[in-house]
Image (cartoon, rainbow, N blue to C red):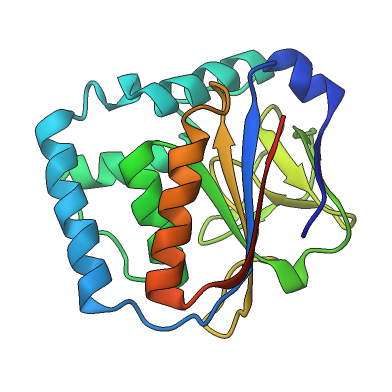
Length: 220
């Protein structure tokens, strides 16, 4: 189990922060038609519940955006990943099929509004700390190149940054051959909504990537 703590500076900005941590063994594979159908069904439900104009009022997205303002980042320029996914759906833009484990994480994010980090635990070095990004902190975001993370909530291992609610880094990204998952669900409104999200995550991980040796914890 990866040991995760919250820094005092982030705790002060967001005293209600809770992190839902899941660590497990996985058997990653291409996204199955059944999983993709679940994603498409969830996307259709999203379209009946929200519009492009009001998706930012979804409770977990709203809470994440409010924390960005407190830590010093414009959530309209650096959108939380869950909001970016939902906005893509609401603009009728197709989602990318990446791999079963990544698409399970995206499905949970669309369903719940939580921004979720998914990491290859074998590439995470030592303990992890949740803090706030610094000026000129190196961050090579997946599919985006260098990202200015100053003022973003951030996760760091003993080498450096591994993820933010906006994007994760390439170094610890999940690949098709990844066998160890570290999943970080960011809740900025307390732990109550985390519990069903963790249960749902475990169910989908077991169903689609044969998750085993599952360990969970909530860090506050």
